[in-house]
Amino acid sequence: MPKPRIQFICQACGNVTSRWAGKCEACGEWNTLVEEGTAGGIGSGPSSLRSARKGRAVALTSLSGDIEDAPRIASGISELDRATGGGFVRGSALLVGGDPGIGKSTLLTQAAAALASKGHRIVYVSGEEAVAQIRLRAQRLGVANSSVELAAETNVEDILATIADGRRPDLVILDSIQTLWTDVADSAPGTVTQVRAAAQTLIRYAKSTGAAIVLVGHVTKEGQIAGPRVVEHMVDAVLYFEGEGGHHYRILRTVKNRFGPTDEIGVFEMSDKGLREVSNPSELFLGERHAAAPGAAVFAGMEGTRPVLVEIQALVAPSSLGTPRRAVVGWDGARLAMVLAVLEAHCGVRFGTHDVYLNVAGGYRISEPAADLAVAAALVSSLTGLALPADCVYFGEISLSGAIRPVAHAQQRLKEAEKLGFGQAVLPRGSDEQNGANAGMFQPATLADLVVRIAGSLRRDAED
Image (tube, rainbow, N blue to C red; front, side):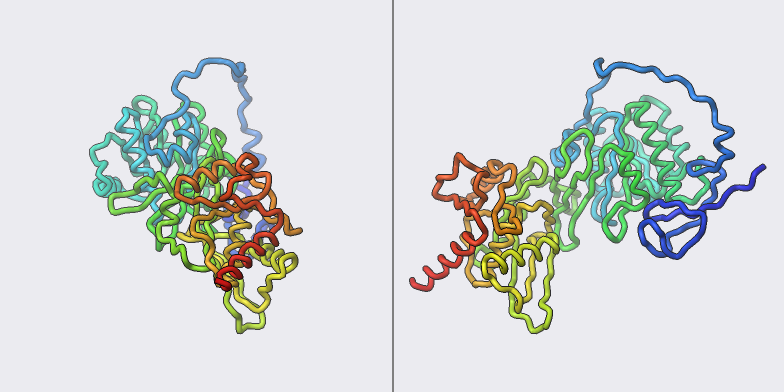
């Protein structure tokens, strides 16, 4: 019998090497290589190939045909259904990640109870908590009387044998994928080999039976789901549950969805009774806004198909340091540096002797470049000490030449702003041609036009 070959697998990226090293050559992380055998399972050597069975022919079919069941299972929690694209797709695998204590188990418990109340068979398997602990959470959430089937198990083969008893489940929740282990891999639970093998087995079960699978994943200190990134490629949808410790709201963000739009969000508010849906997140992010303060601009953004209004706060203060500080919370620091460079090069606004602090109110995170115009307006407002109009929203992308470029979904942004009482808007030319003549719309061609407008209002206030 051949001796099992030893290999070292990086627990951060999944790279395989034959020798141990302090630093992974693929991702550059230190002390992440772990020794694992290859006697069987994923990564096994040539001996396993010699004993491989002969392949069997599978039936081929056409694209047209009837679907046996409804393609989606709607939970009735509108924010969750929005993030998933309309509900859980039968036969799909969904990965949910988030920081410890953010509310992943609470959200899935409420979703399981909501689906069970509609007559669906829901199985909740926990590898981290005992059944009694799950019952305590259900009692706190007021869903203890729902017909959700519970189990506390970590072996994948035992889990599949358990849920195979009875009719096919509509949804299986597994919390979490890092605690599961399968017999086909020899390594310890939580390692790259076990996580990948367990996920592959569960996804195969979902595709063959039509049951939807939800996998809960831990995250690393960088905010990424722990384990090999190949798991995120294997599943059909990846959702991140985000939130700040000092705020009550939580955001369920879709970063991948094969059956719906990406970059969609669902907003919840955490309370002692569980998660409550927030149907209008703009009111939540603008609830504590001080309209008369300089350095604050309201940005009309888009998250998937949903318009969201959020306040961007800037503070420009004289610096006593040789190299002024640049601190950013909720936005891209490199993009802030670009906006500052454009303001200095094309608008004559100097920040070289000032510290610049930028914050997105409420702990919200913005990724789209349409926030450039709102950031620039907030910076100029803070530097001049002039408060921007309280009923004005800003959106537009700034190029390196100082031009303001159009962005998508201008109509939806303006409608959301109008619904919340904003009568003015600063937006790029070409974004909204039919409303371009509206008295409340200002469409600057360059960033210098906006700076002149803000400085002009300051001059008029001084004359008055």
